[in-house]
Length: 101
Image (cartoon, rainbow, N blue to C red; front, side, top):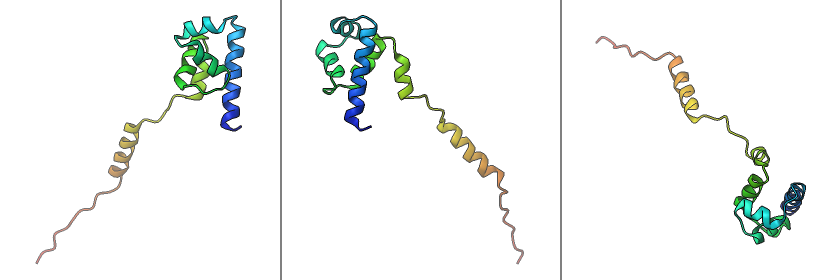
């Protein structure tokens, strides 16, 4: 799916969610604290911001939809540093021996 098709699908899905909740564009735009024009642009795939999409989905009660797009990360950079430090410690250290003259 190319970006234009994806944007079109998102717009149709938002419109379908709005209609399923029996909301007009004016009502939803007020709930989402956006302009009616911004909502129309989103639904018609005429260019919209990520902020608008998130606000609309929140107003529709579909925050989980956004969570699917941005799953929480399980990467902890501090754990990586600790792992590396531990790996260094597990290798035997070299001992310099003095050579007698």
